[in-house]
Amino acid sequence: MRTVLITGGTGSLGSATIRGLVRYPGWHVVVTGRDLARTTERAEVLSADLGTPVTPVELDLESLDAVRTFTREWPARELPPLHALVCNAGTMVVSGLRHTADGHEVTFAINHLAHFLLANLLRQHLTEPARIVFVSSDTHDPARRHGFPAPRYTSGHELARPADTGGDPMEAGRRQYTASKLCAVLTAYQMDRVFGADQRISVNAFDPGMMPGTGLARDYNPFFRFAWKYLMPALTVLPRNFHTTRTSGAALAHLIADPALDGVSGKYFQGRRPSRSSAESYDPDRAAELWRSSAELVGMPELAETP
Ligand SMILES: NC(=O)c1ccc[n+]([C@@H]2O[C@H](COP(=O)([O-])OP(=O)(O)OC[C@H]3O[C@@H](n4cnc5c(N)ncnc54)[C@H](OP(=O)(O)O)[C@@H]3O)[C@@H](O)[C@H]2O)c1
Image (tube, rainbow, N blue to C red; front, side, top):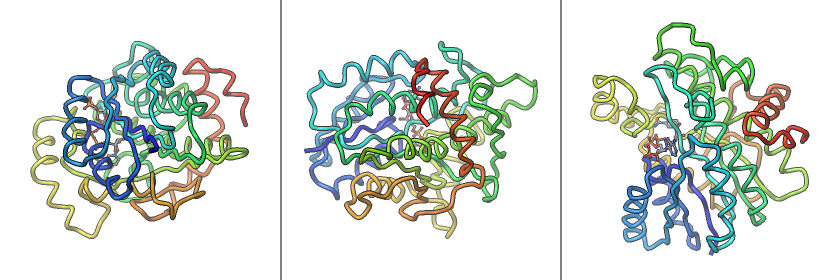
């Protein structure tokens, strides 16, 4: 048995990924969620449906302290060896600028900073060969047609504490989301350089494609939420980057577990297909700057020394 840890496993893509993993026997799944009762209920349903062990763990990614406690307590859980981490939990706050108790803008904090800290702290508990996947989105790439504003990357510190310009909160929130998804790709590439040098840890980024109907639109207005949930799923029949969670979950399970991808690292996948990420995501200086500022923001300045 090998363990895979999936953050946000209670959500749409997370649950679909666990279902997709059934094709690959021998995995013990650990899912994290903010609410232990809800996470336990979801884990029990998945476990009973699939015959796969699914362990629920409470983890609120809004809190860096919660991430530290979670990783400190990891060995005491006595699970099968940890071979994979999937940084899947995500949010998109569009109703106005909000900060976590740590003082960071909430979308950037959950989507990027918490996962940056989690992956770096769990590194010591990974058993090689291991895989880490950062869930990104093609909305990070302004060259693709998706209707989202382009990320505006200045520095990790500015993304953590963006100025409130008094503009449209929806536009600002969506831009912060696309920036956080650019950070997922930059981090995957940089982590591949840092971890990959002397260890057998593969790190990749993944775009599940647009999956209408998931919980990601929960902060939008009721009209959009209705369209997202009931109308837009019809678009998954089109030959565009729209997919059901089932298709994308199966693709993510493939990235986690398929032996065909042994040793494949530092790549961006759209579904099962290796693809080009945005031009900006290949800038090594930007990736190094994000790594350094993220290390400072999560209180691990020693990480900033790594190349
Ligand atoms: N849906 C799309 O079209 C799309 C497209 C590209 C990329 N993605 C990415 O796919 C990933 C999964 O999204 P989804 O569409 O499946 O949305 P979802 O159903 O809302 O799932 C998101 C998951 O993240 C968790 N989460 C949110 N805030 C959290 C926090 N503070 N602490 C811990 N967990 C938290 C949620 O837990 P709770 O249930 O407790 O809120 C939920 O399990 C995200 O990274 C998203 O950016 C989605």
